[in-house]
Length: 355
Ligand code: CP3
Image (cartoon, rainbow, N blue to C red; front, side):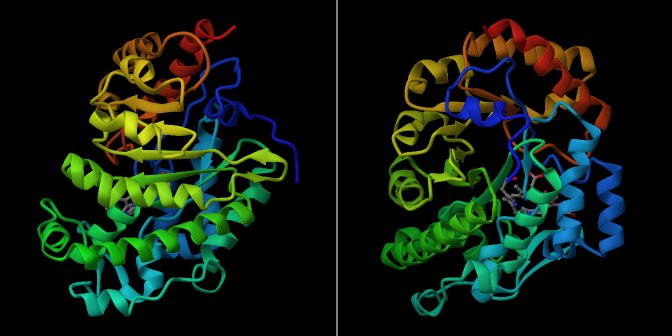
């Protein structure tokens, strides 16, 4: 394998010294880019982009080609590939978000769910990872990812996106054993899926717990964090002679950072509701931090974006252990010029915080 030309993302995740703070954006390959919309039209739809390794590679590279400041690439795929591989029948209704043909409602439904084999059932994702690695040719590291068991369970039980998680919460409280069986099957599936991505060439992995912050403090520990901890303990942590850092991102997890930092990951993703300097004081000796600009700041003008980047860098302060990112995914309405101003500001303003 080619040596990495830019490894500051991996170094910051392990709190090793860097020249400037590395940066990438959640959902960096997506609808705010006209070149992405053109590729999607060419492929037909979103899932066709995900399922064809050449298309997945093409759209992964688009933000890197547009923004030379990006310090990492992220696999173009979706967290819902796992429930799809379990036989739930994922589809996207235009403008409606994800939907499943089958919904998980009973213990019998859960007992019948298979654990997907990453190579047989999700081979298109493994192929996308190896294709992207080849195309990157050492330019920047490639991030693999998965949803957390809890977040995946919400989509499987609701049959799609939800505002209140009515069915999932009812199952959790009415039938905790059934919920635990579902989460356990998902944890096994996620572990082998992420290990498959690592063996195929992913150099870091992120677990997206998008809906963990919607749980009570007690339920978060028992129904989300416990399963992420289990996944992390089963992951390959070194490959090709390098550490493979794990990033755990619970959106809305700011109140629980101490316990999340104890779950075995190398880094925590932060949403924008917490102050990153305070987060560092709470957990910084244990883990690196990734985040955490409010993605809606990108609707403001470049001067305001730059001010906000400066404020977050100053709050984190001197030294390594910070990967700059948004606190959640970039939205389709953002002007690509504003994303560029954001990325440039991170590198320009962060040099003063590193030796
Ligand atoms: O970050 C990247 O550039 C990599 C690609 C990526 C996508 N989805 C592509 C995508 C990643 C990392 C994801 C993760 C994902 N998917 C999450 C967790 C992260 C988060 O945002 O909280 C979740 C909850 C999903 C499920 C999902 N996929 C939803 C709810 C939707 C519809 C809502 C929306 O934003 O449109 C998707 C579709 C999706 N996944 C798109 C992209 C680029 C848009 C599809 C399109 O092009 O029409």
